[in-house]
Image (cartoon, rainbow, N blue to C red):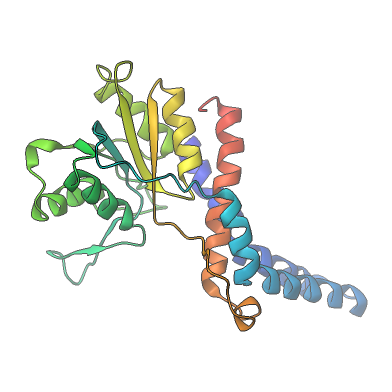
Amino acid sequence: MFFILSKILDIILSPTVWIIIPLVIALRLKKTQHIRRAVLTSLILVLILTNGFICNFFIKNWEVDAPDIPTNKTYTWGIVLTGGMVKYADGHPNRISFGSVSDRMLQTFHLYQQGAIKKILVSGGETSIPNLIVDNTQESINVRNLLIKMGVPSRDIFVENKARNTYENALYSSQMLKNYIKKDTVVVITSALHLRRAVMCFEKQGFNVRPYSADILKKDTQPGILSNFKPSEKSLENFFHLTREFVGIVVYKLQGYI
């Protein structure tokens, strides 16, 4: 039930919905003054939520940009969380395509290649909900297959394919790695925007965590003047993920997950 409610909450947290709501309200208003206020509210939301400068300000203050692991440091386990590393195309059933957060997988491969981690646990299961959401990506299995094709020995890759959210990532990973929780530190690899909540969940399950950020969205370079005013649909998406993480932490605290 919690999983289903979280997916419904995603709709409410969408900035696009925030923009549409005042316009829908405007259609039901009769007074011109009230209609203008509703439309103006929608326009202001558009200007704010599509502004790259404003979006980048909040992202820079939220993302966890963990430092690189020194070349002489080695951990036994690296745990990479699924959530869009690969995608499935109906037109090409035998083809595995990279997803929007594929950098998580590439950073995991990089850590393994440099010897920073000895074994990889890919954590994440199917997120289908009957009649609501269809998920046939088999992401964990496909990520494992891609890592093998990239040169990682199959004996060093393990799959946890039951988790549907970050809490379950940590819970089921703790069950698989229960012999390592107290005596070792694990490297948790996920998007920088998501890393804050992920670390809290894994620490709640008793892990000693060494965070490692992937898919970093913040921009440290000074943008041009035009960039500060140019509307960006990417900013809408980033605001959604940012809001989702903030609300996620609040909800997880209420649920006792962190």
